[in-house]
Image (tube, rainbow, N blue to C red; front, side, top):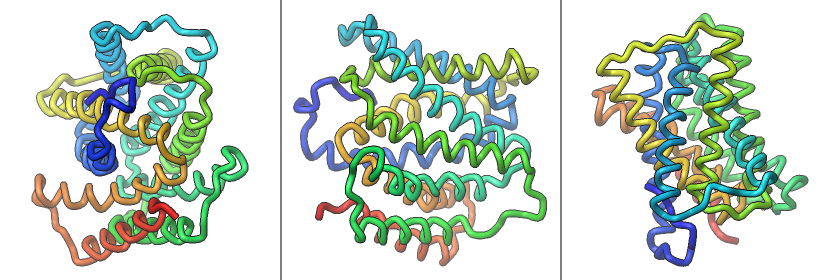
Length: 296
């Protein structure tokens, strides 16, 4: 799903369901991350992914007649945003899972993002975060924590933990940076340069730090295709649109619904167990997101 440049061309009823579509698409990525890192090193997989994402957005720019020739300042802003989001954030999460970090713990740490964003959006973006929003944020985190549980295991890789913390800082910084950007580029153009930034970051990591490998198994191709088409083209474009349209603090609050939605997807598609605590956590997180995103 690629959103158009002109917001007024998008029907209001469509805009209202964008958060729901984002949650569904972003949540589905958790199901396909493990198969990817089981068949490749994380940085080669991500470089591969964003190489094709960049090509896809470039083709769309040509098709929609949006020029990719932009000012140097706009290029730097979009490129660095891609390095933070597609590079440091996703690289940190994929790397941590690839070396044995429990997926539930990695997701729980990254789910702290709305709390950090709320804390920083006031002094940096001059956004007012109300008491109801703060209450919603903590309810959302509580609900997500219940769903993710404490199935951490006895051995937590230290480097995996550090990588996840770095990923948390990167996605928070990227969200605030994206909101603060001065350019008004079409989303396809901005996403094109962000994808280049992410691909560049992973190529640098490959050159200097890792021995890249990819097993082009059927499982890998299905999983990476899912993340290219539905997550990078769909969910990420919607996220950038929501950040531009709404406050940063309200936008990121929907992330609390991602762990419980992932749990429901795993139950529906993978026949994993759905417990009573998952349902309770989903309900609490939903109430939290409602409070954090409602208009005063």
